[in-house]
Image (cartoon, rainbow, N blue to C red; front, side, top):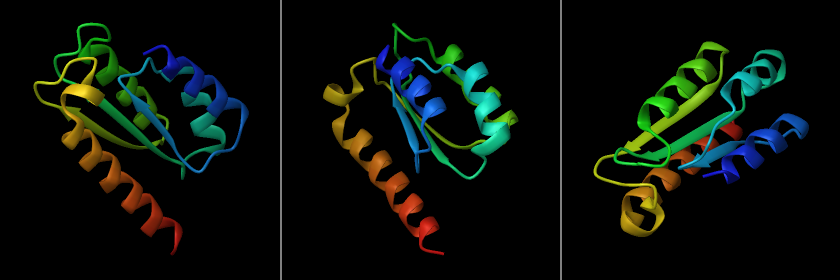
Length: 111
């Protein structure tokens, strides 16, 4: 949730090899400036439950649009039927999405 704020703010201050939000608040407008100036190649993952009643899907959809519009390399995985606690209720789907993203990031970095 609000840990996503910490991820967004820390990512703006430090060069990372990737950024992931899990049911998180995304400061997309602030991140867009960083992406446009220096983060176009940094892979980003957004994992979110379609039934999240704490952070609505529309908010996350909009954030992803802003990030992609700034040139971000965003993988957006929306987990059907999952709520805000998808880490507990839909763990296999979360693990599969995270593993696939990490594999893609790893294979991209070895080029």
